[in-house]
Image 1 (spheres, rainbow, N blue to C red):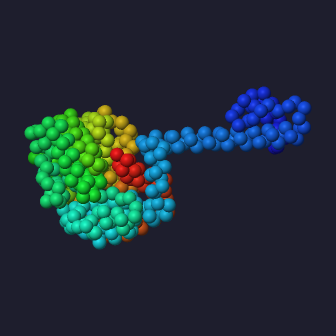
Image 2: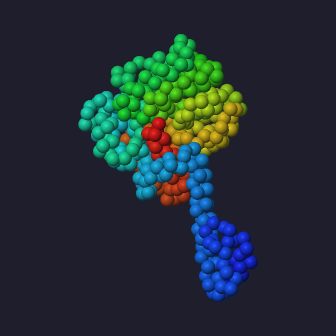
Image 3: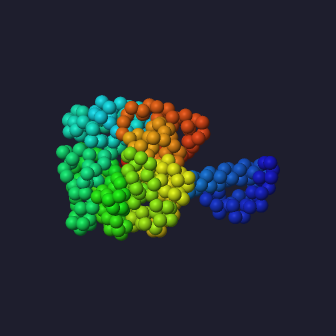
Length: 409
């Protein structure tokens, strides 16, 4: 084999000496053994150069895949836990009651906590037992999320003030004014340590019979919903809070409320043409994460609830709808424990695994009660091969990259 390599390299000698790292041309009267050794060194240099180029190309491709710079990719990778159990926990976000409950969740490795209406306001206001104290105690970055849409869905309004319902914003204010309201809200949220807001709603207003959404929607008109949704998202982003568009692929025209029952929306063709129309323009003009809801869409995969339906996540990732583009950011589930559309079908740990396997990056629910069981379930799924270890890594990395990019902004 060595003789073959030497023969090939000697044949290539006239041009090989011009390759980076190959050195100067060899004298024709050089001892053959010396020539062979030099050529072997040159071959090693070439292989090292090619390996470096391949690595650089792979890093560039990876950064493009996640939609970040190579520097951000490196920073995000440094935050992803190497331990499987900790990595499994890092893609979970749970609702907490108070400081001690939050500390418990984060000590288990949870990637984030959710502030609900039931959460002790002291977690946001009491020095030494607030979010800043949590960050000091835990010693690693984590997300703090809340529902603050305006109107009837706004957690902790006594702390963060009243904001008009989205329908009222769109009917009585300009989109610039809506952005300013979101900026003021986001400033208050950020000041208390909140980093993620599950808003704005991009669902369309389906009228009185449409169940859960109603005035939580900016409009029945997709163009208006996109304009005001993007404006609200920009305001939050400028304040340092990550917006989350919801509820993909569209809950507004579905009949019923997924808090209390299974909910079915229009068929896939109709959903693509109407309910998804706001997503392309909104994401194009104001970046944000996306929450997948529990609505069932006939024609979308097996028509199971979107939060556990691989076809729903593929639709979002591919951007295969009018005006859509491939989506590379973080995908959250809607609440997996307190909504009958899911909880009537399976336990919370089962729903967590089902959603992550389907394509979610972060599984969300409203209590720490089953956190340990959920971590166990995710870990077991990876070991069994039913949930890809690479998929878990990618989701954990997306969640960490969101933290990195958010802090840089």
